Structure formats: C-alpha cells, structure tokens
Image 1 (cartoon, rainbow over the protein chains, first blue to last red):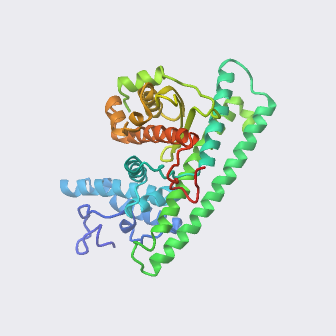
Image 2: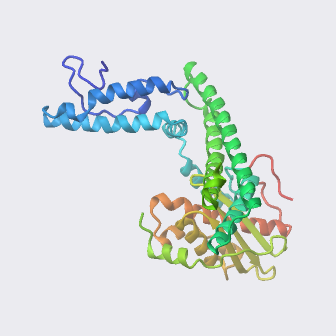
Image 3: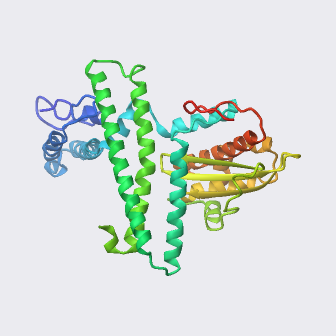
Length: 231
Length: 141
C-alpha cells in the first residue's frame, strides 16, 4: 500500500498533498512509460479511492477520497497520452510555451531585432496556402457546388501527406524521449545539460500542432464532400 | 467563452481583409504563427517612402475570433501611422482595447509580431540593413 495515499497504520485515505502526476503514480520523470502498467495501477487505485467506499466514513475522509479520485483521473489522463505527457513534463521543467513566445516578442520590441520564430517560415507559408485553398473549397460548397473528383483526390493526397508527417514527428519526439530518459537515468540534474533536449521537444510539438490542425481541417472538408470520400 | 463586444464586432465585420501585391517595393509582408493553437496571420502594409506613412494595411488570419479581431484592429491602428509610430504598438494595447482574457493574450502577441514582421520586410526592401533574424543561419539581403 502506498504511504502517500493511505495511512500505513490504518489504511485510511490521507489528505491530498501537492505532488506532480509522475510522483503520484510513483514514477520517475521519464517519458517512456509502460502504459499497460499505468492503466492497471490506475484501476487499482480507482477502486480503493472510489468515493462510494467512503460513504460511511467521516466527512473529512469523504472529501479527501473525492479530491484524490479526481486528481487520480487527471494524472492518468495526462500521463497515458504521449503528447499531453510530454507537454506536462515540459511544464514541470519550466518550459511554458506561451510565456516563451511572449518573452520573445518583448525581446524583439526592445532590441528591434526580428522575433525568433518558433516554426520554420516555409511551414507557415504552407499552412497559410493550404488554409486559403480550404477556404475556397468551403465557399464553393456553400455556394452549392459539388466537389469534383480532382478536389477530392487532392484532399486525400493532402491527408496522406499530413498523416505521414505526424508519424514522422512522433518518431522524432520519441527519439527525444529516449535522450531525456537517459539523462534521468544518469541522475543528471534537469538543467542546464538537458535544456536542448527539452527545447527540441517544444520545437517538435510546435510543428506538430500546425500539422494536426491541417489534418483536422482536411478531414472536415473530406467529410463535407461526401462520406465516400473519406475512405 | 464569452467574447467582448469589440471582438465580436471585429469578427463579424473584419476591417481590411485582403492582400496587397507582395512583390511591390512599397509593400511589406509579415507572416507569423502561434503554434499553441495553430493560428496563422498575414499582415501587409503599403508605405509611402517619402513620408514613411503606412497608407494601406491588409490582413488575412486563420484562427479564432480573438486572433481575427486582433489582426483586424492592428490594421486599423497602423493605417495613417508612420513606420516608427506603428512599431510602438504593443500587444498589451490590443489586449486592453479588445478586453482579451488571459487565455487569448497570445492572439495579441501574434498581431504585434505581424506588424513588426511586415515593417521589417518593408525596411529590408528599402535597402536598410536589418539585424539578422534570430532563426538559424538566416541573413537578410
């Protein structure tokens, strides 16, 4: 039994203590995790913490079990998802994406230098152009024009392209996980040696969010073009 | 989330949507993005070389209502200003004008980035030496 969740002597639920999600599951701050083991641990703890079990306990215990259960759910949902897990770790390590962007703008304003853009300009161009094309398609559709075969096959090709790039980014991210985990195993302090690895993860996630949105929009357009076009 | 009336107004009636001739020497183009949400914003200005006044501004933004409103407002604000005056616009001015909530502050940051990028592009075209961008290994002509 886990001392932090339950009293070692009597087994009663303990008040929530501030802990990160990794620590909550007794895991080190590593990014490659055994999701199956995480899941079974989640179910085991869920059963033990379920508020129904505390229906006859003191009001304080009821409250604690509710809080613990909800924290458990948040922790599990975050850690089981590879992207959410990575973003969460970056946050724990002080890499806040939005603050970085704002700080870069402040710096550009003060120095008069160009802001450090976080994604390559070519990617921005591509995203912009594809959005223009998607908007034209939407407008044509709203004007009652049916999508022709050429449009549908272009969209299908675009979808394939984005799916492949998402996979490539996932592979890139997993390589960085390994690098990070190795540093953790060597007991290296998170800073400053591991900063480049974390920055590289931010970079992958930034590019990924554009590709993910494009894929979502292309899929929506294919859906609108007709259910047959999706296959 | 509830948008402020000003955001809704700019969203429903965006000012200065469109594009200017990218290849013109009088036109500066800024294309910027906010990776947190995948937004992209293009802002273009047409500058009078004699007076340094921004005579025209156009934008096209793919993103949420706040991003569209921020860029719409940015084009309104830069028009009639000199390049130097436009460089003084801060994202916090946009936040205040549109009453943006904290989760939408990045939209105003994007608009400020777009103004700066467009002015920078225009200045480069005028042959003014520009500090090299901080992105890897790129230098401006």
